[in-house]
Length: 188
Image (cartoon, rainbow, N blue to C red; front, top):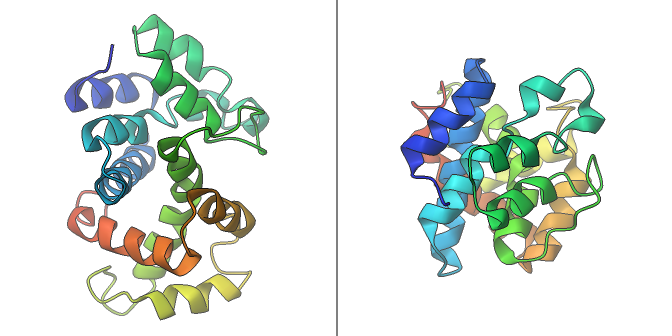
C-alpha cells in the first residue's frame, strides 16, 4: 500500500513526537516533491517517502547505528509498499545501512536528507531568518565553514549529487527553491 499524505503523517507521528522531527519530514517531503517534478516522476510517491524516511529516528536516536533498522518492521506492520521501505532504508547507505540507493528517488533522498538541514540552518542565520532571500552563494560560503552545521555530512551530499547525476550547485539551488514554500510549516 502507498499511503496518502495524511496517512503517512499520521504514521510518522505515531513514532515521532518531537516537532523538529516533523518539521524535518515536511522539509524532506517538499524537497522530494520538487525533485520528482524535475525528474518527471510521481511527486506524491516521492513526497510520501520523504515523510516516512526517518520513521524510526526517535526509537534509534540514542543508538544512531540502528537507524533504518526498525523502519522496515514499522512500515510492514502498517502495510506500506516494499518500494517505499527500500527507499527509506537506503537513505542511510554508508552511515547505518548497507542498502544502496538504486533509483533516482532513492539517490535523491540520500542526498537531500542531509542537505535540507544545511539549507535551513543557512536560512535561519540570515538577518531575515528566511529562505526567501537565501542564495546559492550564501549556502556555498557556509558549506566551506566546517564549524557551521557541523552535523551535516557534506561528503554524503557530494556523493549523492554525483549519484543523482546533477552538479552540486544545482542540487543546492533546487533545494533552496523547494524549501521556500514550506518555511513557515517547518518552523522558520
